[in-house]
Amino acid sequence: MTGYTVLILLVAAERLAELVVARRNAAWSRARGGVAYGDGHYPVMVALHTGLLAGCLAETWLAPRPFQPLLGWPMLALTLGAQALRWWCISTLGPRWNTRVIVVPGLPLVSAGPYRLLRHPNYLAVVVEGLALPLVHGAWLTATGFTLLNLPLLTVRLRCENAALAPSAPPPAPATPPCSTC
Image (cartoon, rainbow, N blue to C red; front, side):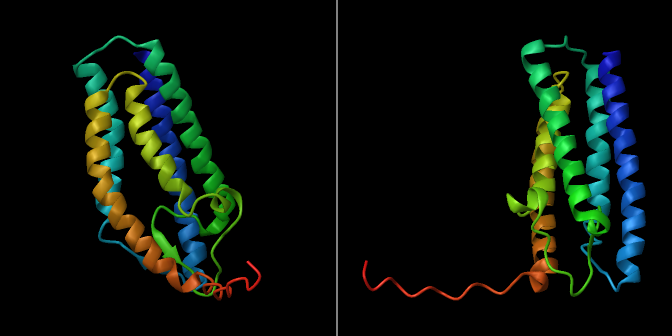
């Protein structure tokens, strides 16, 4: 269990690093006229993500279960993959990445890195981590609770972010006339 505690503490340190990057990027965005959206749901998101880490520790200490290698190792791989995807998103967005929704008017949508494949790859990382991190050590109550609480929050967040980014989206391509020889 000590190894799992270290893993959770490392993820917590990673979250603190994200907040440092986010604060710096928020200043960059605001200096360029960035507009914040969705501040109302942000405290709920912070509390839920903090609760994920606390729940992982609390459940494994209060209801100790043995490490199950057939579950734990694949979940650790998924957790590490989620971290890699998250940092790929952060590096791709550069100073535009933030834990808040801040949009700098006039900047086009990013379509490089993981954004070539998915519109919101960071949220895939969040969903995978929310399931996998607790299950590394069998904290299924935390995995279930976080996932059930995160789904409506993620719905609100995606709607907020999509609405905020809509003016940056390129106009739809004109409809192609049907092929006359087909």
